Length: 227
Image 1 (cartoon, rainbow, N blue to C red):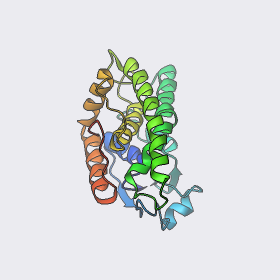
Image 2: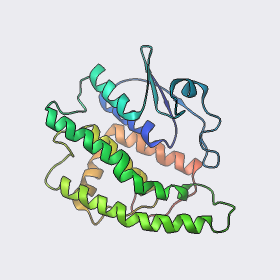
Image 3: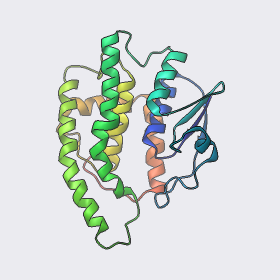
Image 4: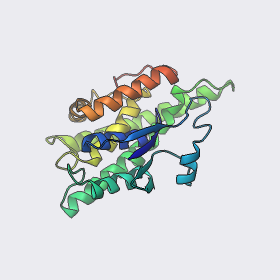
């Protein structure tokens, strides 16, 4: 099994956590990335495999897949133990919705913070405009944290047992924190959930690698909470 990944790709690292949780060995191919140039030059294998030219790309026994959700569902079908999706149809659908919430609903305002790890623009007012957008996004992130906190109150995971939804949500929260987003402190159930997942070996390994990549590749960001 081969995974094309990148040091700071949220979606590729999401797959790395899933592979770790399933105990599946894989060869990782890290594509070129810098904060100034992005993913340039594009890796030729990724360009050939994914029309979007993005990681993650997974190759398993000749099967070539892209898109983190498609890859997660393939891994569940091909390697069902330990499971990352509930067996009951309703809970399975809820797990998929929570993954979607992480990837599209929570991540949407987090994108407004992503300029913080990149070199400042030579345009005089660009950084100020970007920061103004980030400040508007932060209360939206905090509101979505509050929704998650209510969901997690009295339960250890998002959808019954530990699942792909927890992996996806953890990754988006981690990225919000490393980008200087709102603290988890006002949301005790969410903070406790995050702490439990952060201690799991697959999560701890990926988190450590992301923070190390930030030290090498990113502009330092000061935030209210530790990623």
